Image (cartoon, rainbow, N blue to C red):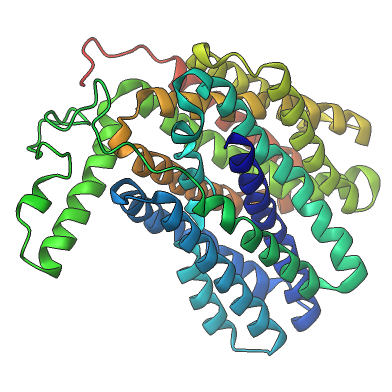
Length: 419
């Protein structure tokens, strides 16, 4: 079962990583300007902040979360296909951005939504190692997705690369539909008789909340249930000190990582005279994360410490990149950054799995994913003008955000901890 899970995760995430470069190439080929594609990518990204919590409610309340995940994958693939077809058919940009915004609502399913199902696949005994493997799937996707998009776009054009990315998303559907269903009985220490998130709110014995008890009110009651469930998911993050710190730190760090992603092509152009080598720096970061995760796959018991250490190493690598006077020194910095970024992500997942009540796991993971995606979008927007002015300044800003994330993680715990 874990093998099927990993195969589906790698396919879906690689297809997602391919879609961005493929859309950029397609938009550039059709319009001669990256403006359209960048606007579409912004639409895909920004709506994740809304889609994540709502997807989490659906996944947590579904008897077959794998089917819900499958429908989300199908919808995301269909939306990308409509965008690519619209670009090729020269549909007005405003329409394409609108389609992208709707499609982006489903984006967190490929990240947090999939990872939230891991305890059902691996079980408690294998969860630590399975979490490391799951984190490695992000590194593999980050390494293989852009590379495949580049090769296919060079051979057959951006549209072909986009179609292949959609095909990979579709190929992941059987794995999603085959994910196991949760045990209908409440887990030990997580029963429905008490509040799963420790907020003191009234819940029915089956854990479905007051909304179900007020059933019969039709659509109004349904939306009330959704609203209460979304609030419960946010309360689960905010009320748990460890989970709150891990989430805030991941958002700050992701904002800084976006500055690295935006700055890498500019840095490559400054040091080598071409932007292509700059894109390779991102591949080095992904490869460094993959290797580090393989070496440190059994460190989940020290997850909070590993997240802080990984963030610090990531920041140190970014500083090396900012100060690099030669391309190969930038490569060294990227490798160091990747060695921190990989374990950092694994540790974040381990904290979420350990600290999140089972009935709210989907909401916490998808909400966390949507918050990180939004943070990445903010970082990208800020990094563009900074990198245009001084790429070293943009990279140092990214490193400073890593230091801020470390400060969040090492802050003293409150004297009392809710839940």
